[in-house]
Image 1 (cartoon, rainbow, N blue to C red):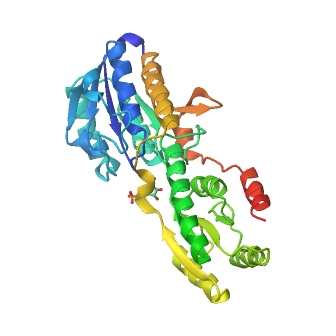
Image 2 (cartoon, helix red, strand yellow):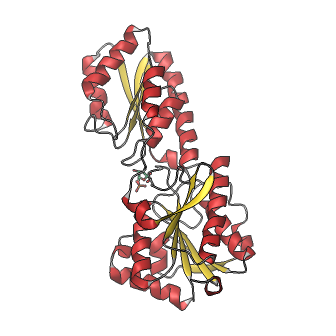
Length: 329
Ligand code: F6P
C-alpha cells in the first residue's frame, strides 16, 4: 500500500496489560498527528472494535499518560474476535470510519487475531509487542518486561529480609505463562538459590539436593524462584510441602506474587522502548508495509512477519542457567 493510502489509523491494546502500553499509545497517536494522519483509539481491545467503541483522538488526548501503568485504552481477552462473524463486525466498523490500518499492542494471542484479520479482509495490521512475559519471537524485549523484572526483584528483596530474619525457605512464584524469562532474570537479579523454569526441568531430587547443599554450606535461609509454568511439581504449594517434608527443620513459605507484577509505573527503559516502537509502527504503515511486528534487536528497531512472531518461541538465554548455578554455590 502506498503512503497516500493511509489517512486514518486505529490503535488498540489487547491481552494482559503491561506497563509502557500507554507510552506506546501516546507515541502512535503523536506520530500519526505529526504525519497528518487521523488516529482513532479503540477501547477494550478487539471487543471494542466489535462494539464500535472507536473514537478519534488528538495529540492532547494522550497527555500525561507516559508515566502511567496499565492501559488507558483498557484491554480484554476477546472470544468473539475468534469467530468470523465477530471479525466481520470489527471490519465493518473500521470501514464505516474509513480507517485504513490497525495497530495492535499486545502479545501473541492478539497478533494471531490480527494476522487472521489482515488475511481475511486484506486490512493492514501492525503489531507492537507488549507483555510482561517477554515470550514473543522477533524482539529481545517486549514492552512491560523490564518494568516487571524490576517490580519482581524489588518484591523478592523484601521477601529476603523476612526470610533471613526467620531462617525460612521461600518459594516465590512469578508470572510468565509458559516462559521462564521473568523467573530466570529475576532469580539472578535477586540472588535466588534456585530458579525453576518450564524450559529446563531440573527434577525435584536435584532441587532437594541443591537446597541441602546450600544448608551445609552455611546458608540459613533460601529463596527459590518458580516460574508459574514450571513443571517440577504439580504447583508451587505442592512443591513447597514436598520440600518441607524432606527438610522438616526448615520453615517453608510460599509467596505467589500475582498481578502486582503487571502494575506500576513503567521503567524508563519501557517508556523509551514503547515510544520508539510506536513511532516506528506508524512510519512502517506509511511506507506501505503491514502484517508485521515491530521488534528490537541490539538496540535497533526491526520488523518481522506476524506469522513468525506467533509461530516461533522466544528462547531463554541458557547461559543464565549456568551463571545462576555458579553464583548460588
Ligand atoms: O500474559 C501476561 C500474564 O500476566 C501472564 O504472565 C499470566 O499467565 C497471565 O497473563 C494471567 O492472565 P489473567 O490476567 O487473565 O489472569
